[in-house]
Image (cartoon, helix red, strand yellow):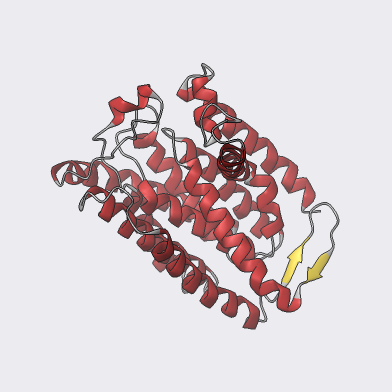
Length: 318
C-alpha cells in the first residue's frame, strides 16, 4: 500500500501539473475571473480578474487517479464520489458568481440542502458498512468508541463543520492548498499505519496539492474557488470518517477550526455589541494581514502550525 500511495501521489502531481497550464488560459479566455470584495485588504484588489474555478483541474486529476486504483482499493470510491459531489456544489456556486454575475452565488439554503442530502447518503452508507461502522478513535488513548445512532448527527457535524472551515481557509495565495497538502499526507500515513486500504486517495490529494501549488503560490496564477475548497473539505471529512479519525480533524485541521471560529466569533460579537469587532477582519488570516504580516508569511506560519499538529497527531495514533 505504501508503494501504491506514493505512485498515486506522483501520478496526481503530474496530472495536475500538466492540466494547470492547459486549463488556465482557457479560464482566461472564458473570463472566469475572480471578483475581489472591496471590503477586503486593499492589496488583494490587484488579484481581481485572476482565473478562478481552478479546483476543476485537481479534481479531474484525483478522479483519474481514483479510476487507476479503484479496482485494487474499492474503499477509495466513496471518498472520491464525495470529493466530486461537493466539488460540483462549489462549481455551481462559482458559476453563478463568475459567469452569471450573481454576487451571492447559490443561496445559503440551496447550498446547505445539497450538502445535507449528500452527507445523509454518506452517513447511511457508513452506518450500514461493517468495514467502517460507527466507531471513532480517541486520540492519545487507543480507545475506540462506538457511537451507535449518535453517529448519524455526528457525521453531519463533522462534514458541514469541516467543509466550512476549509472554505474559509481559501483566502490567500497557496494557503488552503498548503494546509490541505499536509493534512492529506498525515491521513495517508495514518491509513497505512492503521492498515486501512484507502491511503492512495490521500496520496493523490497530497500530490494534487503540490502540483496545484506551482500555479497557486504567491502571486497566484489561478484560484481554486469554491469548486476546489468544497471538494477538499469533502475529502478531509469523508476520509477521516472512513478511517475512524474524525476527532483528529480538530488537531490536524486546527487552521480550519480557527478560521471558522474567527468568523463565528466576529459575527456574533458584532451583533451583540452593535458594531464592535474582535478581529480587524475575519477570517483570521486577514486579521494577520492587517496587522502587517505579508501574505506569504501568513501562509508559511499556518502551514508550519499544521505540519507540527500532524506530527503530534501521529503520536496520538498510538
